[in-house]
Image (cartoon, rainbow, N blue to C red; front, side, top):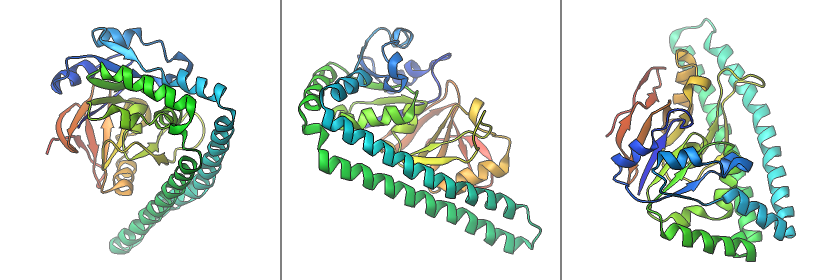
Amino acid sequence: MKVALLGPQRFDPSVAEAAKAAGVTGRFALITAGWQEREREDDELSEHLGGRTVNLALHERADDVFRSDGELRGAYRARQLRFRQLQDFYRIRLEHLIESARVIAHRAAPTELLAQEQEWSVNGIRVLDKHHLRQCERVRTEFQKEWAPHARGRVAWHRAELARLLEGCDAVAIAGGHVASLLNRLQLFGVTDLIGERPVFAWSAGAMAVTERIVLFHDDPPYGVDAPQVLEPGLGLVSDVVALPNPEARLALDDAERMAMYAQRFAPATCMVLPRRSWVLFEAGALVESQRALTLHADGAVADAEAA
C-alpha cells in the first residue's frame, strides 16, 4: 500500500506532485471531514487534482447517523466525555513531568549523572504516554464491542454508499482540520477497511490521523501550555512515524533541546516534520521518496528526510 504524508496544502498545494510520483492518474475520493461544517468547500482542492474527485462527505453522514440513531448518539457522547476526562488526567501528569525534565536538564551535575537523570526523565514521559494510549484504546475497543456501529442500520447504509463511491476511485485524499473530529468519522464508518489497497494522500491533521499515534503539539501556543501531548492511537496506515505538520507555525526548530526531547520521547518512531510543499511517500511501510520533509534526531539536529 502506498501512503503519502504531506505538509499543509491550503496556500501552496503539492498533493498533485506527490500523486504523480506515486503513479496515480485517476479519480480521488476526498475526505474533508476535519473541516467539519465546511466539508463541502473543496473547489480549490478539486481543481488542484484536475477535477477528478468525489467528496465522501463523512461529516454530513455522521450528522445523519446521529439524527437517526438516538441510542448510538447517546453512547457516542458518553464515550467522547470519557476521552476528554482521560485527556485531562493525562495532561495534568504530563505537564509536571515535562517541567521537571526541563529543570533537571539545566542542573549543574557531573555529565554522566546528568545524562542518566535526563534519560529517566524521558522514560517517565514515555511510560505515561503508553499508559494513556492503552486507556484510549480500551475505551474505543469497549465501545466497538458493545455498540458494533458498523452493523447498525444507518451506519451500514452509509458504508454501502461509501463502498460504491470508492469503486470509481483510484486513490484517497485526506485533508486536515480538526483532528479528533476527523479521526472519529474515519473510524465511525470503518474507512480503513473500505479503502483497501488504494493509495492514500494525507496532509496536516490528516497526516497525523493515519499514523499509529496522534501527537498534538505547539511550541509557542497562543494560549494554554506548550507540552506536546498524545491524543490517541491513529489509523496506523504508517508505522513508526510521528507526523509533525506545519512546523512554520508550530515547531521551534532552532531549539535543539526541545527537538531532542521530541526525538527521544517518541523513539524508535521517526519524528517527521512536514513543512509547506513537503511530502514523503511510503510503500509497504518503507520510505521510498521524500521532498522537502525533515526529521528530528536525538541530539536535537534537524535533517532532510531520506529514503531507505
